[in-house]
Length: 348
Ligand SMILES: Cc1cc2nc3c(=O)[nH]c(=O)nc-3n(C[C@H](O)[C@H](O)[C@H](O)COP(=O)(O)OP(=O)(O)OC[C@H]3O[C@@H](n4cnc5c(N)ncnc54)[C@H](O)[C@@H]3O)c2cc1C
Image (cartoon, rainbow, N blue to C red; front, side, top):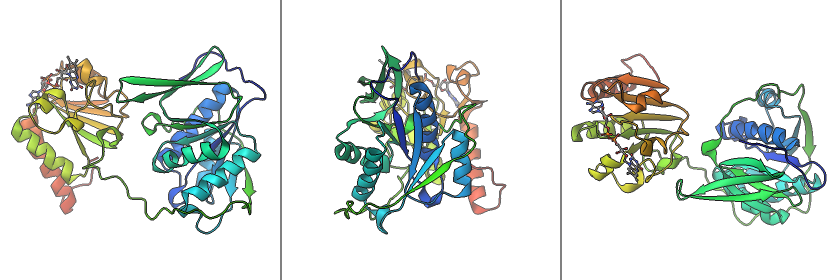
């Protein structure tokens, strides 16, 4: 993601990474932001520390060390700490300010996206959200985000002279462990609650996971997309499949033109840019206008009758097959697994 050498104004930057531990464990966002932190620390020649609001298990400590973390700050908060964004924001800001952290890094998920502006306000820091890329340009850190799909890019330059709160778009996060970065030991520092932090006026009542059937396709975890290779009957079967395995549905532009779905499910240059964990392309040729919108997918699997279709070459796994034969078999297989009379294979 980066080129050139960073020239810090003043002392080398110190990165503070906020890591949420739902159920006490690291999720994909946590691993993704740790991976990004180690990469960014290397690029900026910076020290970095991890901040958590809950006790870390031995397994979490081992993973932190694998990513190269050397310090873990554990906040000891009031009982309702996890329920109040304001309190979390104030506590994290307090740590960042006392440690003189110049870069506060967090994933732009439901929690990080809400905390980032709170932190920036508390710290009187610059705020840059949903970053998708960064590079070093003329000694500065230049971070970029995309707005309105791929059509508008915004960038910000930073020289470490003022604190920066930086949230990373989850779709570019990957849990890659950089080679040679592992640390021998993670030093734990308990950070007692300061009496200056008062209870917040708002509380998190519940964190409800997104419904794959209605979530924006750009945020879909597993996306099954349909192209012109699917007949109307085939499309009905794909809809049934997405409901059976509870995943999201997308379409190519011609499939949208045929009226298969609304515009917001269209994937590609004119449609949405997506980055699911799994992208299943059914009867899609793989035109550049479509590929442009799916290239950040972690895994692409395609089914196409034509072995020369361009989608085959960019797929991690491709099946040359006729969807008219595949779809009924696939649906029957899924139903049989959910009835418990088939071998489990992990549909999605
Ligand atoms: C400015 C511009 C912007 C565009 N933006 C977008 C965009 O955002 N998104 C987008 O998708 N397109 C976009 N397009 C259109 C794009 O160029 C392609 O025309 C489109 O992506 C092709 O869609 P498709 O793969 O569904 O159809 P096709 O290219 O017709 O491919 C159908 C595929 O289905 C396969 N097939 C046929 N029958 C079967 C079967 N029985 N079983 C299995 N496979 C079968 C065929 O082998 C073929 O590969 C844009 C075009 C322009 C000019």
